[in-house]
Length: 229
Ligand SMILES: O=C(CO)[C@H](O)[C@H](O)COP(=O)(O)O
Image 1 (cartoon, rainbow, N blue to C red):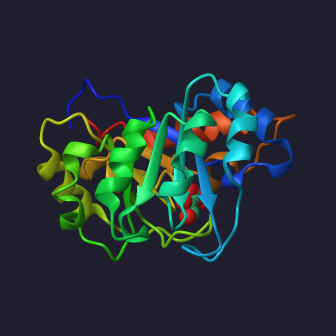
Image 2: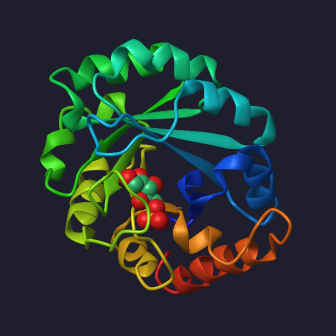
Image 3: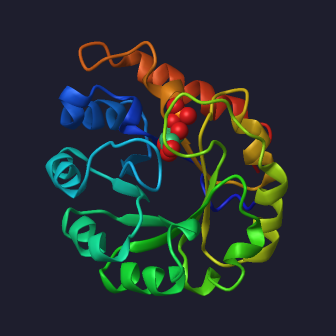
């Protein structure tokens, strides 16, 4: 990993107050978040339902920076335009979500968003080998998707393989699931540069007392400082 690529922390609002998303996004950005990660779940591809494009559009004005939308839905293609119109900067689809991920990534880029491709823990790095020219981000799931607050599954070998496959291409490697100050160094050392963290960022704070968000984000940054170079 090269020093010109900063380590980015992307709090997942799955762990925020659902009745207060706009204020939560603004609060966590003010406390040092780099991106806001938005988890869309359909109760079909994953066994949980979160929210959809209308919610993304509603929170967009409260986010100054990057809105990173993770689609845990199947099928995907019919909904890409909705999320692009909602203001997503990145739209990530799962390689497992359908037979035509190549077409999906093309459609995401055509919508004006940057394209991400996500891999479940059971899916090898080789699944994206023929997709890298169409991807701006590879999301490595370190939990089985569907719920926040799950135990981290070590995918550092997959991250190292992906980093070698990616080489000098400007493609982010994002880690999603169970990231905290203990697990973050494992994946940062392997070559990840975007860390999604829900529970580990939002715990202990609230919109009326957001300082813990900053403390939690700094704790992750400090934990990786010695290994991310
Ligand atoms: O995509 C997700 C679940 O499918 C969440 O983004 C992820 O689990 C982050 O939450 P936590 O940091 O609490 O594990």
